[in-house]
Amino acid sequence: MLLLGLPSRRLLRARLPGFCVTILIQFPRAGPGDPFLPGEYAVRSWRRWAVVMALCLLAVGGAAAARLALADEPSEFDSFNPYLHRTTGELADPINIIFRGDLAAARVAIPNVLGWKPVAGSEMMFIDYGTSRPTAAQFGLDLGGGSRYHIRLEAVEQQNGQTYVLAGVHRDDLVACGHVGRAFDLARELVASTFDQAGYATSRLSLKNIEPGRQCDGSFTFGDGSAVVIDLPGRQVAR
Image 1 (cartoon, one colour):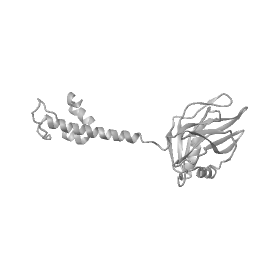
Image 2: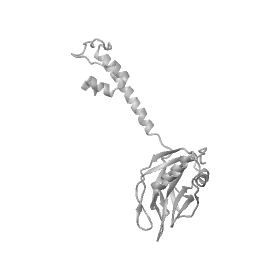
Image 3: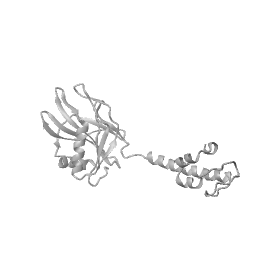
Image 4: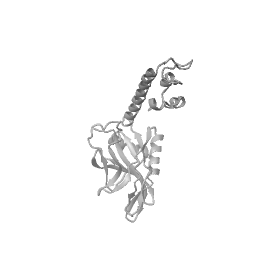
């Protein structure tokens, strides 16, 4: 397209990398065979100009392809469904915490860092690597008045190479039918800030899991679609 349209010098500067612009600063003014103006590089024929232009375009295309390949590389977090599900299969809570490490380390870190204790709660399922996995452990902090902070951890199977444990955290409020999970974002930020203050490395991950989940009282609750990744000491790989 550049060979046919003969783009302006300004357009060339805007769209080509510096090494191309250095060579191709000025086009012939009258036609094929005319020399470049004084002070420019001595590329004196349209054939040579076309060859150099083609090489520049190949370089630009190769760099773009490399960036695209890098962007499409699989992530360690590409294998799971970003929601917890009830045993009936119905969508429930968003996953909003990911522990990078193994289940044993997560079981130790939660009571040590948060001060939360093991609690009972309804069974929910995680969908990871194409299979349903039950809840391995639940921890909570009593807030009084029937409310509590509550987190569920994924039961990580002997999946060779898995580097994380999925979790869902929220505030439970007591209603007539049982507990209703709310405040997913607030609970996530509490967990993240507490681990951060304790010296753990944390980062953000957009899961876009904003679909509302139906609660036992008929209400629908949801989060903002983000998760916090917490690096556990050693980052041991589950095997």
